Length: 245
Ligand code: PEP
Image 1 (cartoon, rainbow, N blue to C red):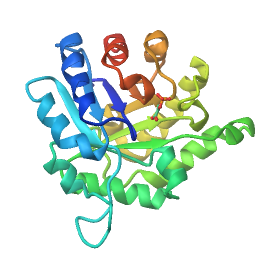
Image 2: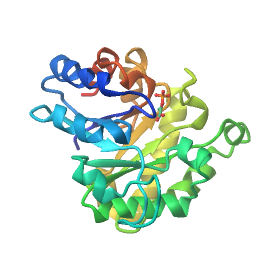
Image 3: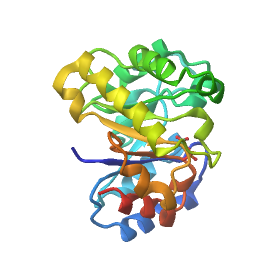
Image 4: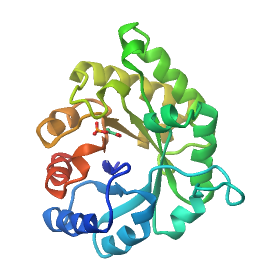
């Protein structure tokens, strides 16, 4: 399995950030893992062009479930593919919260990514309230069951476990806590999908930085990271990429 370092730039960046791609490619010309940047939709095509000739792949942060039609402001998975993207993040907690995305919507978006020949990065994770109530495994297991479509394979699907309370806060679960959730996710996926689930990459996300990446990547069933803030600067993201062997 090739591990994955995925950057989510969220709603950050205009044309000047394209330079970060060249800087990242220069800092990590032959990464040991797959490297992905998901910029704002306005930059995807330009970033895909800028990444040509480098090992860096690009993707989107969301898509509509439909192929086209009267959906003002949305983009389809086919449009992401047309703009050079290889992956689509679906079900990020900010989309679940800001746009009331349910597991059923997330599942439909993952299927849309597959329809366009792309891979889906399906995000799941508990809130602080849920963790403190001892409901992490139940909540994450429920989101996994509801958000991952039938037909998921190690090629078309990546799972990102992102505790909502760890995103952008500088707070990170203990390594044991991360391991317990990732082990449970793997068990559930293998039970449902069989051996292909052993090839499905399970990313951890939530305040991953160059300083904590290596220890997080040492946890069982952590096959990479989904990174927000620390993916915006090539120097920081390169430190995370180089920690992922
Ligand atoms: C994210 O938004 O997916 C994320 C993990 O953000 P950060 O790395 O900034 O916590």
